[in-house]
Amino acid sequence: MKKQSFISDSQLVAMYVNGDENVLEVLIKRHRDKIFGFIYSKVRNHELTEDLFQDTLFKIVRTLKKGKYIEEGKFLSWVIRIAHNIIIDYYRKNNKMKNVYESEDFSLFDVLHDHALDAEKQMMRRQMIEKIRLLIEKLPEEQKEVLKLRMYEELSFQEIAEKTGVSINTALGRMRYALINIRKIIEEKGVQLVG
Image (cartoon, rainbow, N blue to C red):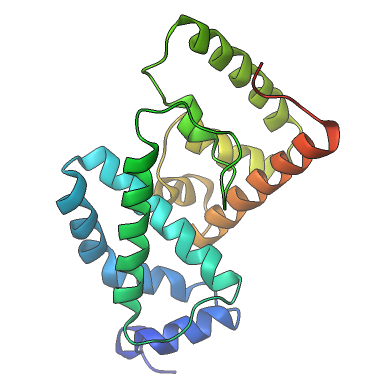
């Protein structure tokens, strides 16, 4: 087999879509600096850049897994477009009380990290955090671990992967399934997070 550094992005994407989970790390390492640099140039904050970078990775994996990636040219250009859209979404949502149900993902982090809340909203936030904590306890152990590391310790997916001894793709997958399962529990049991 060719050394992975000589394999084109298109070939790596095809290998990933066909089940070779390890090639995702090659793609990420290959383009990390450019993606990170692009995000940083827009937000000028290292911590926020790291969060938006992780969100970009999550969206890349989700899109590839759903088979929605269409080879239109360069993989990096496609990733930069994703990062650009995530930055725009971040600024649209910034400084607002977040809606628990979002269009593509169930995002607990937006609610948990909104520090500009009045007293009533802070009380609602505390109640919501407690309800979310109880929901998290119902998850399978591996999903619970990743979710807690991301939410409470605010680790990046790379750090979670290293800490749990799995690939970044596995960490992202566990996070995705954790959020899907929490959404199912909320819908099935009619849990009201707000109010």
